[in-house]
Image (cartoon, rainbow, N blue to C red):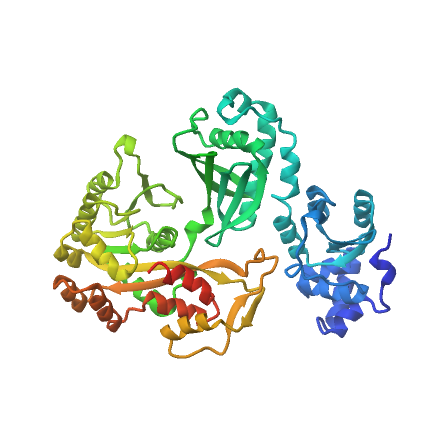
Length: 566
């Protein structure tokens, strides 16, 4: 077994730090004196005193100890490596197995001189340890990303006894200790891995011979692992128990909700189950509490478009409608809008299906058809509760559309969403729902159409040459080409996708007198759209390509999410 301490350079850490310019000699002398007097390690005092960052310290130690500094953002860790060191041990020592060369294990660690840790890992792996330097925060992040739904889940599944055929599975078997213990551990591990992978949904889908697990990350479904069908019954049973569903019901759709605590944060999990030809599937929606605290400036508005939307929010009454397909971020924008308007001076009331995030200081109601609590009935009740601002989760029928319109006409600021392809299309959608044109023009202050695209990962962003098709699409919308186009190369931090996070694409229509006149005169959507652009509306496709120009997203992602949906 070798250690990095055997290969120390002639220079001390102090000399290395001064030589590479991270600290001057006078300050270094002062820090060294503080370390001696406090009987602390020099490295510890350097960071505590703010003289250098922990990352700069790692770079200096790498030079001093002549140990390679590993950039874990660029390295892919194979599942076989994860099996060499148990997760508990990796977290305890903050180490990560990188590669095996012969009988040696390359081990990434924050302190390559820690002989005790090296000895313990050598004893567990029965291999010679070659220490590699890594940034402490990157090692912790890599542990979160790489341990999870890999080998550990498979090992847990093997302890489950083979159940009877699907039609013969009894509730007593599903609730038995033998079935539930591995199901609990498997489900917890899947949820933990999904949360740490930034997933918004977990899809548990049975097929003929395997149980498929997929995560939706940045709006895109990705295969993560497959499980033995032996775990299927117990896993669905566990989900139903913790979310207060009927465990005996396997044919009718059900939904429920429960809360988990991960890394000190409470996270709501909303569950929906439905029967397929191969058994029940389940979709788990991960609702992070922090999402409800988003600011409008975080969503992707460019300054000019944000200013137009802010002007709508300042209106004392009227209706603001958001349009777009399912999953286009309408709810997030509505929550961010209420978050900005929320104050003690306003009575804000919402009716949602379901309530996804709980907003402090806002009166939120949930649709419950069994109790005759619908969008329309709740809106009628709201009128007697002295509201200032009303949010209706979605306008789906004529009755709700008419009541929301009347609420806007009687001095309330009303927010809601409809399914429409663009901002002008929202006008015609309200007309289709039975609201007269003159009432739409009188009540509607503005409409917002939106989509979601993925943000290029900032850690692996690189310039590239677009294909001829991509360039054609860009040129059709923009007058000039940027100096460079960007994409994500794919790294460990983004899971190899090249994307990290999402960004909104917006089109805001304010109902000017010219737009109202055209609508009342039964003008076509194309004619109204042209007038809206003359009045200052930025079209969806133009906003999307501006974000390509700024290096925020890519042309292919814009074509997939914006152009294909209208």
